[in-house]
Image (cartoon, rainbow, N blue to C red; front, top):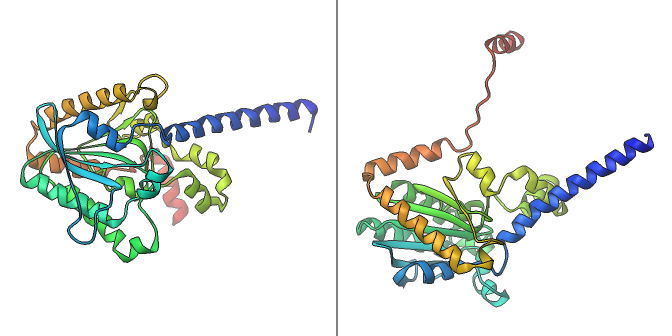
Length: 299
């Protein structure tokens, strides 16, 4: 290989490495410990909120906070995933990874919201559902599946948003909604980049490469119609101005509730179902001549 070619290849690799690092910076921003957590938003966008505890089966998992509150003129049920702001809080809340008790609590509160015709607001911030033995013994998969099924059938408006990290079934379980938004610097994916690299290449160190293939940013997911809206954050990120981020979130939720409350329950369910039926739909135009050629070759 000539010296010039070596130089060009080095420049190309350095550029690629820089771009991958920039992508990883977005993940670190979404995971920033200073970023406003679920509890902060509850205290700053809802008035007269009352927290409700327990799943009525086993225990109360603090990873998900749920209850009733008022936002603008709307009384709503809120269901919020809550990471900690320091190591001690994160250990207590399993670093945002919910046990089945959390999902059963969420399911219970959703049924209550439907009974009293209250809209539901879900805020998502989790690296995934807890995958330990004890969670599986207590029915993690059943709890997730039941909550997913329940959300498709609820006859009240549902708004869900990713406020930090949204990964795996732990995030999707609260994302079956009529409006799904992401904050500007949030991420949303089927699993964490580290897990993706570990499963696909058996090498967690290739997490940057995995991230480039996953398309986890708000801009990318809006382009793919996975989400409806992006909420801009204050300069530098939500952690630089939590009050500003809370104000933007509050106004968005009020606006969407005003719109969704105009729709009938049957229309809400129909639109919600149709929305998720086309998730992952891929279209590719092929000329008739190409199709005929493929058919001839197969025969």
